[in-house]
View 1 (tube, rainbow, N blue to C red):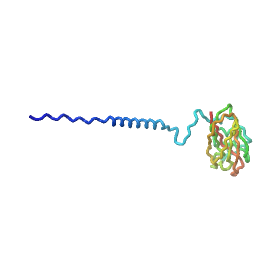
View 2 (view 1 turned 90 degrees about the vertical axis):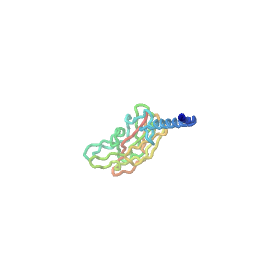
View 3 (view 1 turned 180 degrees about the vertical axis):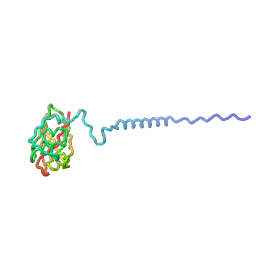
View 4 (view 1 turned 30 degrees about the vertical axis):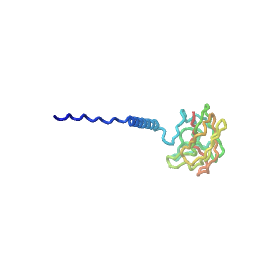
Length: 208
């Protein structure tokens, strides 16, 4: 008579310590994935400072006073070109305010309709237009502002050295300033590049 088959061998029980280690590792992995997804914000790329909530460009609301205005000119196509003060806050850097000669030491005054908390200022420090007809770059033909100071109601001053570029240059203030009036003093102006006018393409005030 044959012997009955041996009963199946029982599997070794899994150590409780191993199970605990596996569970902890899985929890850590899930946590790291969740953190990575939270931090993945396409609107805030590396190096970009998030704008303060509710901040906006407010210079367009301002009344602008300038120390003078050059007469209207003519572009390469014969069209009349204005250099009015309103060009400073029209949002178009290819238009410009322009005054005859060297405006070093002169001030431009921006008066807002009500007090605003300003966090950032900016400037296009010359005539950024490229003539459609001739292709001439007006930036180098006129004087450019090389150093500028923004002055606020409480006496706070913010001075900046500017690069010679037709691109907008913006600066974050050391601390927000509440003000209704902003005076922009032209501390240094370049030599003329063939046309003896001081020109500014745009002024910017960002605040709430």
